[in-house]
Length: 191
Length: 193
Image 1 (cartoon, rainbow over the protein chains, first blue to last red):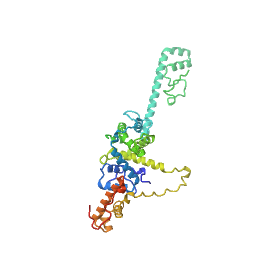
Image 2: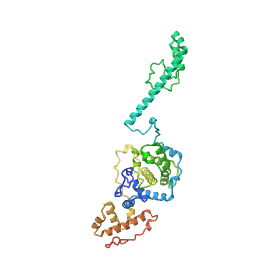
Image 3: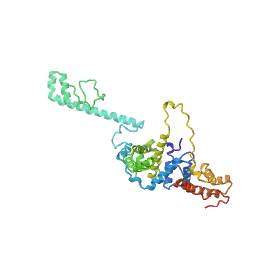
Image 4: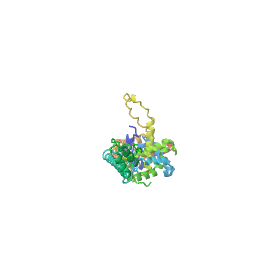
């Protein structure tokens, strides 16, 4: 394990009596040292460590030199860099469904997402069915007598298709409510 | 920086966006100066900047949770994390690539070589001894004095001089000019400065 293994950025904060033999101080200790806020014994330990760790020494030297340059908060950052970092946390407004693409947290979150998706699809199917029935009622009022007299199922189907939302095809028995393909996206009629 | 870290940790989008907006200049400056010695907006710099934010969010914001505003400023802490990540990236690039077919046959990793004691080399032998006893063996002043057969005040004096010299050596542009005012090393009388 090199002195700068990522595990050295460990969560446990170091107290004033931490030892650093064989490992490096964490970022919080070094930041306290740089800002002059480290207690005397911690500062001494860090300085002894810096005498034996070229990597930490280089980092601290750079940081000290850059601090002397002044305020970095005015440095220009390209908009795409900021946008990319901000997008690491997805938008989640109150009342919105969870985004479909997100850092997956197994367990309850996945189950709730699945339930919400199923509810959304069921709502779309219901809307499509309602639209079909409205269309059927409209066409029946104008051509119902002719259709009934001729007994022409094909003509009835074409008439229905003309005024329906194109969601459900009455002549296609295989298109069940559970068939999600093409629902709300189909623009074809059964002519 | 005036950011809502608890909000970021709890996953609030508005808090995170504001944190990024305020911290990006500091992080980019630290990354750029570490990589190139000056401000440069290369793709490498931008990649490392993103890596910093990914690391801050990783494992349920584990790193962010360690920040203590009572000990240091957020800007200093973020700049150190950024510099550490750049250093890790350089270390990985220096390691030779191993083909998959050679993984099983690869020799075991040799033990890491000890870092050169360039800083301690600037101390006298007695000062190095005191520093090692106090900071590596973790002896108390009294224990170190008993081992060396000297007055505890002698140990304190040697420690103080050693650390003073160490600071000069570590942060001086010309460490070779940092003189040792205690060339005689430890003395039985242990006269403090």
